[in-house]
Length: 352
Ligand SMILES: Cc1ncc(COP(=O)(O)O)c(C=O)c1O
Image (cartoon, rainbow, N blue to C red):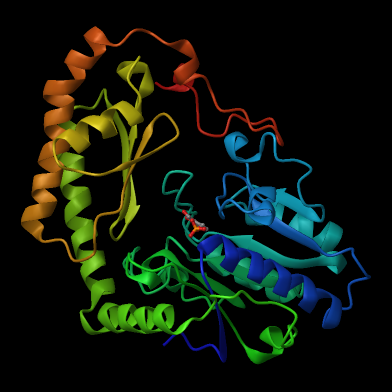
């Protein structure tokens, strides 16, 4: 289905990431001849790859990393979407870089879509410097973004793809790492695995969910419904321009970025709680972003219903909440990354 020689099944998404990182290191030593214990993985600022030690070692999320150090060595960070900075890192450390791990669309960071041409540049740079291009498609893949893989938006083929989440059809933990033989066979039997990785039930569920995604043309459906969703959300934005700063997304992978200056002391979390009361489950990311990842099988009427709920929250609930919620400065403090010192997600003072 994806055109790779081999698949290594695991259980959770984070385990899939761990597997890909181990694979990259092993490939780095065996094929690229990186000196022993000197392999480097490059990952992006603002990324999210799960909660295991290797995955949080890539993270800029203070809540995920504080109190869990020391983090894994052999790791460098680069701004997401910045291919010039990526090339600089490759130029300076290229001989030791085994892999570039990235999300083609950053999910937890708030559905951040890279500039056009970025994925192609990443592909070219990874080929030029002999670095494995490792796409974490755990959230962006399997039709979520309106294509089977988000990398398909620029028709690039990563060396390693990590799948999870929807692969289990929402009922069973199952993840998978895809690669060709020259990469995958760097790990030999006995060198990596998990008791339940690739168990028959999970494998059957994974195959069934892939069949459904293909047979019900969910990628096309996600692309069309995503357009509808964003049109509806933009209508709301036009009605509440003070509250909504941006509507963005690809397929049914969308986000509404709120303008916290006008929202204070209300956060995206408070809005999501109100949405829940009105029948919609949505996930806040940071203080100001609401991530919307509705089921790919949702009908147009249900989509409209969900958007109406947001309209009602902004029109009816928000003014009420603003009157009653006490000001709590710490809940809207800017998020300064412990590692790079950057204000990753914007502060209320920056909103215009
Ligand atoms: C891009 C990405 N990678 C990895 C993970 C971790 O997956 P899991 O929670 O199944 O370990 C997530 C989970 O949200 C994710 O969004």
